[in-house]
Image (cartoon, rainbow, N blue to C red; front, side, top):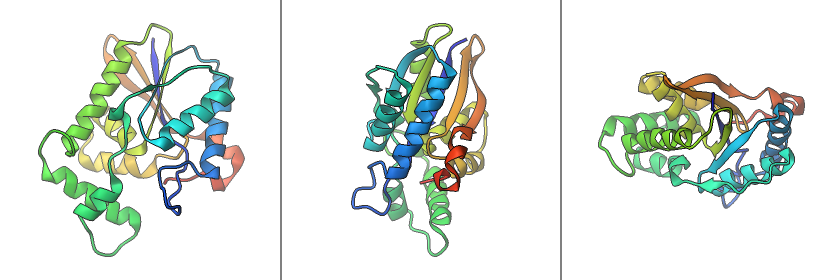
Length: 211
């Protein structure tokens, strides 16, 4: 049965001028991820990334560590939502950054609509991208998809038939450098494991990051 790994990028650089850049912690997470992929001895059929720099940098570092000489395919549907744009458009007073982001995401979802820039456009784009990856994957092969927390949470909550509250709960806890495993078969695509980050634990608490 084909398998699809949804891999969250390593820690970005929220304190830097350019957020969309892997931090030193992010590179270490990507290295440990690559070592774990190598340990699993996967038969990799496809490698896909979003177009964001942090996603592509994570893919390059992890693939190099895993010894996989593959050129990733780029697909914008695996890009993250614009969290800064959402925070600006749906401003919430007070609270932590996570609380303000949750409020902004809730307002975005409740705003409705379809097409680019809407919640439905984002969610359905992720599902379509997943379907495309699954359709081009041979039996016994694994696809590696380097993406972001929001896309992973949107895809997985959709597979589970979860409410927007379920999406928000999943979105909060996706660890940088974690692996979510899906299986694709006659019955469609199913979630097997979510947010596996055991390979990062050897690096201690400093590698348990969420931004």
